[in-house]
Each structure stands twice: as C-alpha cells, then as structure tokens.
Length: 481
Image (cartoon, rainbow, N blue to C red; front, top):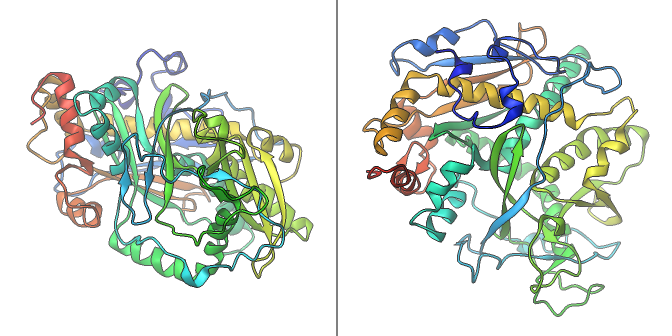
C-alpha cells in the first residue's frame, strides 16, 4: 500500500480528503517545497531491525518573504480551547488533583521600571534537567484523573499528543532552512542548529517528544551554564511581574519571590491544524491582571512574558521582528495566548521599558517589510511535515503489525513498539542549500540507552507509560495486557 493510502488520521476532515492520493510525491505550491530526497523510501518494505530504517524529506528553500513568495494554500487552525491544567511544585512534584493542580498559577502584576533583574541570582533554585520527563505529565494527568476511561476517550478524539514546543519546532522549520541558507550564502556561521525528536504512532495517534540523549543533555547543560545569568533575567522578570492569586501584595508593590525554576503551571489545550486534532501541553507564565480564583480559566486570560535587550538600531529592530517576534508569536498562538508582554532590559539586566503585543496582530507589524514572515507559510509547511511523518510511520511493516494486534485484540505486542528518531537539519551539504527531515527507526538497544536512559523507571511501551497504553487497549475491547 502507498504511504498516502494508509494514513490512519483521515477521518472526516474535508481539507484532508481534498488532497490527491499522490500528494506526498508532488511538490505543493508552497514556499516549503517538500519532495522525497534521493534515498531509501523503499527500505520501508524490508524486514526490520537488522539495521535502522531511514526515510527522508528534503526541505528546499525558496523565497519566503510574503512580498515575493508564491501564494500558499490556506491551512485552517482552530482557536485553542483550555481543557485542564496541572502544576509542578517547588520540589518538582507533579500536582494533578483538582485541589492542587493550579497551585503554581500566577497572575500578572506590572513590574516597576528600573527593576534590577539580577536580584536573587545567587539564591535562585535551578531545576535538575539531567532527567527526561518526556510526555509523562500529559499522559499521567489523564490516567489518574479518570483511570477507567479517559485514555480510551482520547483515542477517539486526538491525532497528535505532544508539548507545544514540538509543534513550534515544526512550524518554524521552514524559516530555519531560510536562515541557514542565507547564512551560507553570506559565508556566515549558521545560527540554525536543527533538532531531534522521538516519535511513535500508536492507535491512530502520533506522539512527539524531545530527544534527550545523554550526549544532548550534557551539551545542553554546558551551553546553559555559559548563559546562566542571561537566562536568569527571564525568570527574574517573571518574578517581578507575577503574584499568587491569594497574594495580598498590591499591583504596584508586588512581593519579589526568588525564582525557583521547578515551579510551573501548565495548560492542556485542544486545537486542530488542517484536520489534525491535537492535544498540546505547555507552560503558561501567568493570567491577566485582575483575574481571581472565582473566574474560570480560559485561554483568553493567558499572558506570555518575555525579555529582550533594548533595541538601539534598525538592525536590532529587524532582528527582533524577524526572529524574536516570529518565535513569540508561534509559541503563543499554539496555546491561544492572546497577550505577550516584553520587558526590555539593558545588557547588565536593568528593566527599562515594557511593551504589550496582541498575539494575533503581530503578523501585521512585519507585513510589507523586507524581513516579513507569514503564519500561512509556517502552518502550510508544518502540515506537510506532519503528513510525511504519519505517512512514513503508518506504512511501516513493524508499525502495521503492532497496530494490527493492538486494534484487533487490544493487546500490546510482545515485541517493543517501533520508536523513531526524527532529525531536522536546516542546512544539508550537497542538497542545494536546503534542509532535511530524517526519520530513523531505532533498534531496541538504542531505545533502551538513548530514549529510556534518562526517564523515570516505570513500565513503558516504547517511551509511553504502559498504564496509558493499557487504558487504550481496554477501550478497544481487549485486556490491554
């Protein structure tokens, strides 16, 4: 069967039905031209796991400025709806019950201009990032809130479960390719580094998590250590700008609490990208000023807090609008965050100004400029990438065999569920200046060492909690064992 004929996520979504059966082999009329790179797509039909299987897509950069780019087909994106929430405590305990899931929620309080963002640096509590939390919090929330059926209900409703950051990476990939191409053309060292994710397709649902191999964790720790104070400025700005809903401090004189990066309040939202139903989890910095515990929690109340060095030149302004606002916009609209507040600081960490942006109005700020970007371009390219990922996994013999036993009997196959590594390289030598998205099916040894090595010791199917998968199996009608 062809990859396009086996995609399990095409339910009743008209935008997907209108696509031609061979759409994976045709370059769509979009600035992100996706075409199979020369390589082993045919390897997907060979017996598994004697060596890793690979599949590639080539991302070719073409003019991305909306003023010069060819027209793109529109991809619908549904306004995110807040479903539920959970918190992490100061000791990184996961808080899921109705009584404590909003314990880390904060409310916006305008900070005082002139605040020293170095305050509390020596006393700050930093989260231990040596482990890999993966998707556990998202899945555990539903397993524990309704063990009898919530996991199964999810099976019928959602095509993608992941953190907001993973979809952000897919949306921004097209612009990373352009940035890397421009850097190479001007003999500059590229700033676009690419990324890696772990991927599974189970029961018609795609699961994406950040790849945190021991080597990547070590490199990340070294990098963060060298920029620790700059990172702290963001946490300090949040501390100056937020308070607990129960706090008695005034809006003009909030109490500064030393940052503890273990503490987070996260929302799970439901949204839809071009027919792909998604449940996304993501941290929300705070809710709007004036929100009280008597009010319901809605995405309309969400506020994102960011810091930026003071803009002092046209080049600074261009870089801010082209890079920072693009990322801020993408992160925020995926969770339905309507307001972004940027604190501008000096290089030594003193707050000099505040600026509030309405998320949905940000694209207009850069429209008709030479460094303009388009949300339509990001949505279209991400949609194509998701189609490629699902097509590749759903047409794989290992996945098909596991799915068959799972769907027919509701049982977890005796062999490990296929786990894939997805690598994005924005600049691929010898490929015309474009980038490559590569999918590699991992061997059991690599899964054990690189995918599960940093995770909490618990029974799993691939990188998913086994109790989550068992819940899906019971829903189907089998034993889930």
